[in-house]
Length: 311
Image (tube, rainbow, N blue to C red; front, side, top):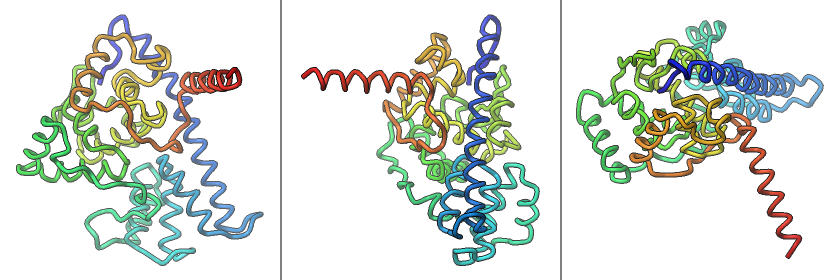
């Protein structure tokens, strides 16, 4: 991942500064969804509707809101509108705890799961499609995955595939990013202090709730959260999302495209050679679109309407 140095320092500091209000807006939206969910769950001024509350919490949870995970866990732990399921409750509490919710950490100790893996409610997995077969990957990505599955990195390979499903990312794209960022080394550290498998700088790790950048699963979660967020922000444009991962979304917004930094352009080209797709599915609920993309879409719509009227 590229970061500020030399004459580009001011640009990257500005990119970080611009990212803060964007992240704050997303967090505020998620919290609004949780407040609305609480009203429906507890019949505060509206008829009690557990299903509506659950849907609102689930949408906020997709935006990595800790309280949303906590409240979903509480619903499953106490059979509030849904059959009691301690496995789902424990998973939700642990997710909330990883995002810094101390009450959830205590509840995760009280309500335990006998499963060794997470169990998610349907609303968090229903739109996920199975990962492609290895023979659907580009030759390099297929070779990477075969070697990992056959060697001591089997657990890492499984984590990559499982988390790709969870965050609704094409595992081929994730593999391409991993190969380019760290070559699958969980202890990698760049001269610019990008760390771990997905080469997260401390600011990005904090932004996406990564506690230990050198823990492979924790690092993968943070990197995939960021990649999912970028794909939503740039409405599925792979090149822009990759440029944002490398240089920051603020730099992409200012350039209104891939920034003219040699390192960023080479980075995008390297990954596109491994993942030659222009568009990736995205969840529009994760965040609002880039402002300049919105303007571009409005202009295109206006031009289309004008053309239609003139015919």
